[in-house]
Length: 218
Ligand code: E4P
Image (cartoon, rainbow, N blue to C red):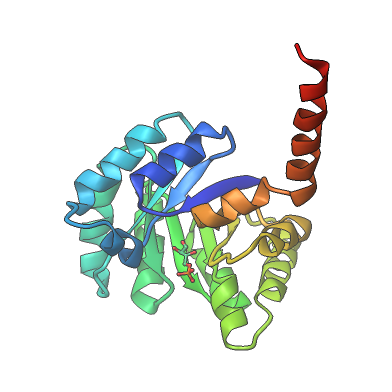
C-alpha cells in the first residue's frame, strides 16, 4: 500500500519523506491557500524536488471548471515536473478532461469522488487515481469506508488498472480499514502519519528500559 501525505507544507513533506514511508503528496487549493504567499507552480516544483525519485507522485489540482480551462491548466501543471499528476474534479468537464489529458499521457487523479458510479466513470475515462473522500462522507452520516470496498469490488470485476486513493482520511482507523479493503493508496495529513507510528506501550516500554539501564551504571 502506498502512503501519500495530504499537505502542501514543505516542512511536513520533508519530515514525512525522511521516515522512508512516503510515496507521494496530494495537494488541493485549500491546502495551498494555507501556505502563505506561495507561487502555486513554484511551490509544486519545490514539493517535486523533495519527492524527486522515479515513481513518486505529486498531485496538483486545476481550478478551472470548464473543459478548455482544465486542459490548459492541466497541461501547464504536467510540465512542471515528471512526477506531477493532475487533479481534476469529478464533474462532466472533469471527466472530459480526464479522457483528453490521459490520452496525451498526463496522469489524472480524479478528485471529489463520493460514489461508486463516479469512480467507475472516471476509470473508464482513463484516470490513474480515483480519490474517494472518506472523512467527508462520514461527516454527513454515510459510511465512507463502504465506498472504498465497493470501488475495489467493481475495479476487480472488470480488471481496471485505476488505483484507489483513499482520501479525506482523519484518523488511523481509516488507514487500517483502507488497507484491509484493498485501497492502493491512502493520503493522510501529517498528524495521522505521526499517529500511525505511535503506541503508548512503546513509550512506556522504552521509559522502563532506560530507567532499568540507569542501575547498570555503564
Ligand atoms: C485529497 O486529495 C484531498 O486533498 C483531501 O484528502 C481532502 O481531505 P479533507 O476532507 O480533510 O479536506
